[in-house]
Structure formats: C-alpha cells, structure tokens
Length: 224
Image (cartoon, rainbow, N blue to C red; front, top):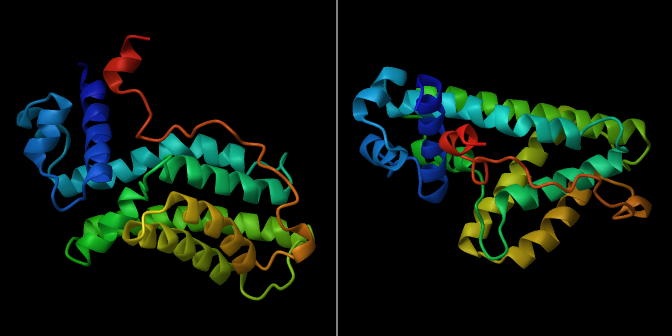
C-alpha cells in the first residue's frame, strides 16, 4: 500500500471497529491487525488513538458530504429534503434487523470529558450536522410548511438531539420497525410541519450513502 492508502486504511478500519464495538474497547493493536499494517506505520501517521479518531471524524464527513449536498439540494422541495434526510438516516444507521447508530455520538457518550481533543472534534462534527438541519428548517419556513417558528437555531439543535436520542434508545429496544415508524413522525412533530403537509411527498434520494460501512477499502479501490 502507498502512504496515502495506508492512512486511509487506518481511518476506515478504526471507524469500522468503533462502529462495531466502541471507542474505549478498540485499541491500537487491534486497529493495526485489522488494517494489516504495523504499529510503526500507525505511529507514522497518528500520534495516538485519539489523534486517529479526530482525523477520522473529518474523513467520515468528507465521505458523506456528497450525499448530504444531494439530499439538501435546492432542486428538491423542502418536504423532499426532509424525506431525503429520513431516508438517509434509515440507510446509514439501520440495517434490516439491527441498529448501527452513530459511532461518533456513541464515542462522545463513552469518553465524557476525558479527552478534550476528541470532544472538540465531536463538537465540530455535530455543529456541521446542525448547520444542515438549520438550512432545512429555514427552507421549510420560507416555503410556508411550518405551523410555528420560534428559535430556528434551537430547533436545529433539538432535531439533532432527537435523531441521536432515538438511535440511542434503539440500543435498549432494538426494534427497527419502531424506529422507522417513530422517527419520521417525531421529526414532523418537532419541526412543527403543518398537518396538511405530513407525508405528502416521497424522497428523491434513493442511493445507499457512501458510508464507511459500505465504502470499498483502499485496497479494493486501487484494484478498480
């Protein structure tokens, strides 16, 4: 593998392992073994697991940004954007019979405030997602779809909290059918969408997101 491929392989492997397990239980040795690289190669790119995780948050965002830009594109109506977001959440955080959730949100809950560098990276990732939520809320409001509008920035944060709260609760009660039933209605209620507009459109975005879970590895990409 080239230097760039090795770095990407480490980022992808770390995210995969953290997604499958959790941040605290995944160690450098396990990451290196799974990625097929030496510890020397690991420390050539990253000074610590925390440093790797921080870079992984940026890498993950680059992977999904193309999908999010398509989901929230102004060529879609605000209601289509909302339905696109719901579809994206289902595709990226659920499988047919299990809950994947968000590895970063889960890691933040595990770490607490012990590692300021990691917490800052998670804050930045969260704020970027909230910015997309805010743009959606503004579009819905401008289009006359909302019944009530108070503090849109707070609404964007509440939307973020709600989505991850549903996913966290789903670990306690892992019923995919309940999540798929409750999350859409909860978002419509939280956003204050007027009842006459509820579920009146379908998503225009149908492709599976290029998430770390289904993205080809560096080795696979180099052979295509």
